[in-house]
Structures are given as C-alpha cells and as structure tokens.
Image (tube, rainbow, N blue to C red; front, side, top):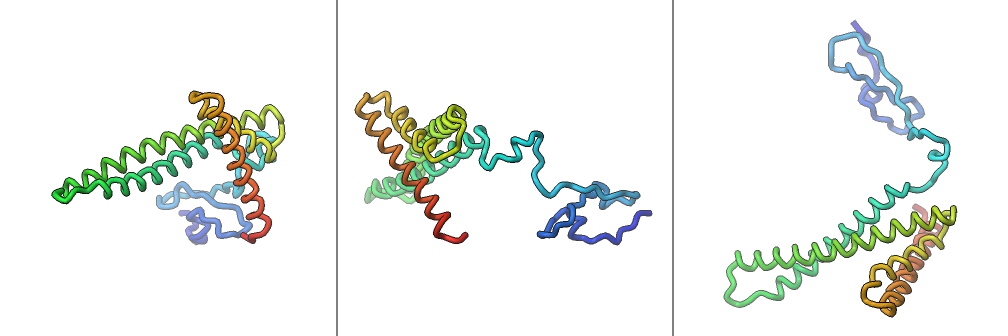
Amino acid sequence: MADHSSNRDTDSGFDHGSSQPRLYNPYKDLQVPYRNFQLPTSPEFLFDEEARRQRRSWGENLTFYTGCGYLAGAVGGASTGFVSGVKSFESGDTMKLRINRILNSSGHSGRLWGNRLGVIGLLYAGLESGFEAVRDTDDVWNCVAAGLGTGALYRAARGVRSAAVAGAIGGVVVGMAVTGKQMLKRYVPI
C-alpha cells in the first residue's frame, strides 16, 4: 500500500503562499499505490514573448470590454427601466399588473443600454488593439485614440458633426479615465 501520511493542504492542491511546489494526486481517494505529481505554481507560456507581456491579449481585451460594457449597460438600463415602470403606475392597477410593468420596462431598457454599451466596448477594444499593433507600443495615446475613434465610429451614421463631437467626448472621457487610473496607482497604496 502507499504511504498516506502526506500533508492535507498540499494534497488538496492549495498553495497557501509557500514556495513549495503544488502537488497533484489523481488517485487520492482510491486504494492503489500512487505518486504525487508536481504542478507549476506560475503561469506557463509557450513562447518567451508571451511571458514578458504585462497586459491582456487582443482576444481577452475584446471579451473584457464587451462583457463589462454589456453588463454595465444592462444593470444601468434595468435601473432606469425600474424607475420608469414605477412612475407609470395607475391608481387602479393590481399588484400583478404593477410587477408586469416593472419587469417589461426594466427588460426593455436593460436590453437597449446593454447592447449599446456592449457595441461601444467592442469598438473600443478593437481600435485599441489595432492602434497597439500598428504603433508597436503600449501607451496612453493608444487608449485616447481608441476612445476618439470609438466615439466617431459610433455616431458616424448621424453625420460628420455628430461623429466629431462624439469622438471628442470619447477621447476626453478615456483620457480622464486613464489619468485617474494613473493617479490612483500613484497616490493610493493598494
């Protein structure tokens, strides 16, 4: 029989901040002789260039910004829909009808705002990754240019003036967000 006197924390695969290798035991609960396999404690990369990168890939970036935009838009839209549903109550409504109004209004507004902000996130992530690939640098100007381009592309169907205004707003908003993030990193110890 095998020796079962190993530590339970390392047997379960949890690494509690120690420099010990993580052990994996596929036969832990079986009554067969086994050996522990050592698993790496750091991420593994196929190429050295991937290990040196300090940011998300373009696919991860695309998924992150689109998902966050959709989620934020859906929650914000559902909240505004809830308020408009409550405001549309009439004196003779039953509780069932009031709940139906709230649900319909929240679902409609959440869907609209979620789709809008999801598309904005998709455009921003694509433009940011594109600017990074073209310029071959990762700096603040890629973010600001992506914000400017996102605003302009999102409002392009409404005319040149609307696209220019939305592009300027997008560039300023992203510039303020990046500046705020840098100030937060610098002055707030996290």
